[in-house]
Length: 197
Image 1: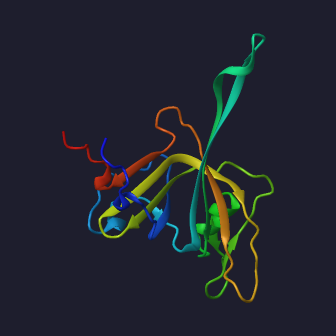
Image 2 (image 1 turned 90 degrees about the horizontal axis):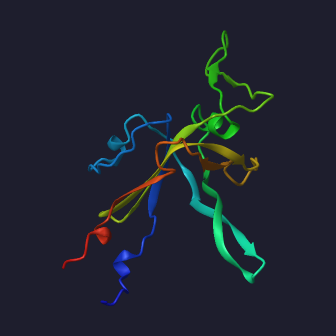
Image 3 (image 1 turned 90 degrees about the vertical axis):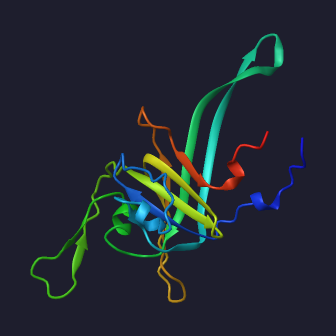
């Protein structure tokens, strides 16, 4: 086996974006010069905090214990939790309903100027969407990660302060829809090319 130390395969998410779409929105597998053109039908959620996106995959394994052994003899997968956590910096008709759990922003009828309202429902409802994540590392490497169905399952507190931007921090959790994978990676990255024979 050849030396596997290869610094060109280290990935740094230099810049990126988070997008939402309708459940079943087509995930872009082509990488054109203008990446935003590839995400047709998706909504870019704009600026996020400099912390970027935290990707988490947690599998729960339950041990199978026996009378004949002190250690488990095997494990059974009982749960998989796949989440993306990020903080949105822009407040608008796309980001506020995502953070709050659904609904729509509407113009206030009869009001003068730009006056809008958002009603937070007393009881939460399902606000399922597709979620896309894209990041680039230099000019040659682009990664895309798509969850075809999921929803916001946790919202951070909004801190309103004089010296810091208010943030809409959310945790988005993938849901199984029975047909598609839980999530899909698309990579424009020569590191995945099959090695020469």
